[in-house]
Image (cartoon, rainbow, N blue to C red; front, side):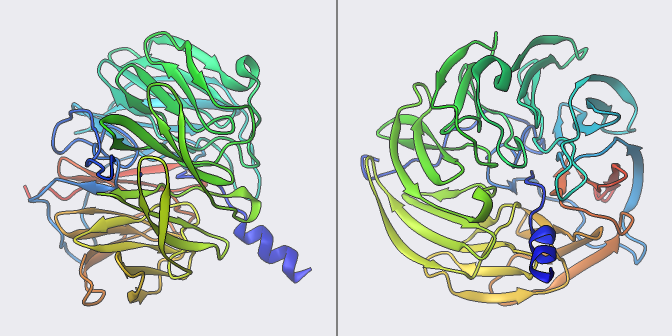
Length: 413
């Protein structure tokens, strides 16, 4: 009975919810330097280029600019051109919100039917909206891929992948966010991914109909070709973005087929991590193969991804601690308890950490030890599995249940 209880507590929502022997730094869409237009930011790595924001504050915390109730879900936040986008579920309808960043004023909201899909958690949308050009793209737990117009919320196209393409739901339903490159939207659906035409939603390529993983595609360049690494249900797959051609696969079996945290790629190195005591590993990757450099259990990302900064990995070790690892060796430099199954991002050499109970903390990103610069309880002590976002001098965070979204002023103005 106790074992079943432990399993239930650890089987959670998957949220949030990689040449010719030389791999380029990736290919990224242009965005305002301080904007955060998609999951993991403009560089797809959880690291912001923003500087000048205030990393310390009074005991009561940063000034609250606005709050909103957005419904159930674990979807993160995107920010583009003065607008904020996020999602929640109310009465079995997924709702995409568009708010004014300064004031929180609702510009528009659009909804479509989607069950909560509660399973060992409250349910609700996990994938984060992706803003690209004049449109915003979403992906529901039920397989709804939708393109909305940024200006008005008008639906340009809506395609349900389970009904129209026959792909199988993973156990906790779809969670990977839309990834856009050129004219393609790549989704973690089917055995090894699906690509749709971003303009009209037509299928460009499809690799199988099996259950997917829960991560989002991560870009890299190989042999001069734009590629993505996709963490699927049972393996890490390298794909040519334009065609879906599979270059190689790294077997990666995790309990309950939970591969949710995105890979981290730099140069010809790729870092992988999964929870349920699976652990992490570093690989050297080439045009048609890979070599394992090290493997251990020092970092076990359940669903929230790590960040890489100046040769060190920072992340949440499966509810045990915020940990710092040497990227080259996998050695633990330090581990700090007290954040549960929280999440983090990085900006200006500082970690922005949200605990799973609503505590926001700023800490130095240094292998010398955990040094907290500031902290405050910014949300009620409810479940906070969603990664916070810094954009244009504001930090956005949400919780679940309750679906409260808060916007904090860290501009220093």
